[in-house]
Length: 432
Ligand SMILES: C[S@@+](CC[C@H](N)C(=O)[O-])C[C@H]1O[C@@H](n2cnc3c(N)ncnc32)[C@H](O)[C@@H]1O
Image 1 (cartoon, rainbow, N blue to C red):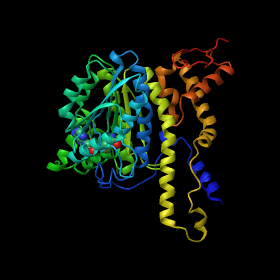
Image 2: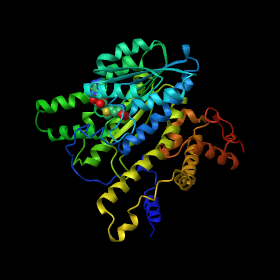
Image 3: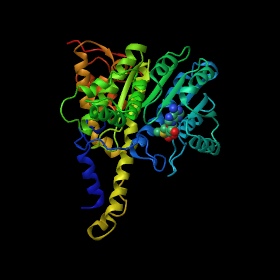
Image 4: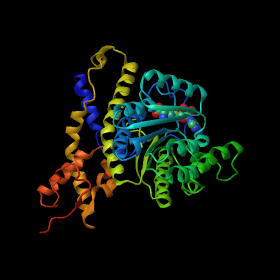
């Protein structure tokens, strides 16, 4: 079989709602990986490609929209755990992606960037990368801890719209700071994109379970207390303590994801911010490493974010498939029959992926809309998570639009799906 066919066939087998619904099958007990590995900035891995694809798209949408009415069209980007700016393999990190978004809007929006980084060496590397990038964005690299600098950064934001990216790979800002300083900031619109390290919380769950019949050691207490601080209490510990039987890595990760959902619900109850969350995997059949959550008060923000997730998943597919091909080539070399496969002539084709997936995604969305209509008319933007359902992070706005058009043609809804504001209109069942 030609490499191209083999690649496509292998890929097609995996093409079933990976991002949102794939049930992993790994059974290892907790590995002792640190939360951020020492080689994090060596080479950008597929989960980071997903996050970066989001960062290349969403902040631009945020700034274009919110900056149209802000004073002097000013918008703030805060990268609270900024890193080095660039990976050693040359791929841009989050600060460079934010700077590029700002440059893309230069002339119409004034974007100021604040980049906080605790590690001195990383902060110095970042300052150099940004200086060499030639960005026209006004920015400040702030060496130090976000907890210490958040207050002064927020003061400098004034009433401008703020997009904050919190990507610690581990526990982030203490919950009271997230809630009272960031999410209840006045005046000015705020959105927060938060990285929740599911694998790390799962590991903490392992510690709690190991110590079920004894007090935690000093080191263990210190580790789990960081999670208490981040999640705003001890409530999350019960999720692990109350589990019966063996808790494998798979079960622990699924518990961690339930904890991230509960956290989003608590934030909503206490602040009114709603969230769209998405688990991010290294590749379809592996456990999620982390969950990304966008917190916003705006249905438009949730809508635009869900749309971004679908298109960002294309970059993720390209990244994990390229990683996989690279690993296979390294392992198999170019001997014997494998010689056929040694040239990377098969590449992920986003258009083929969409062509093959779209009919299924659209019918899934149609079904979700029909189900939602059983409770009466609703706006798509108010029910983002339910509208996408299992294809959140797989399909995008275009597929929702197509679903509405199909439902209109089938005589199910009044809405034609025509125009760019279809997601703001009330979806109304057609009277029979
Ligand atoms: C996962 S890396 C960030 C990657 C970066 N956002 C990107 O996508 O290119 C996390 C960074 O946060 C930094 N960090 C950890 N705790 C911090 C804190 N409390 N305040 C500021 N930076 C912190 C670490 O030194 C590390 O460089």
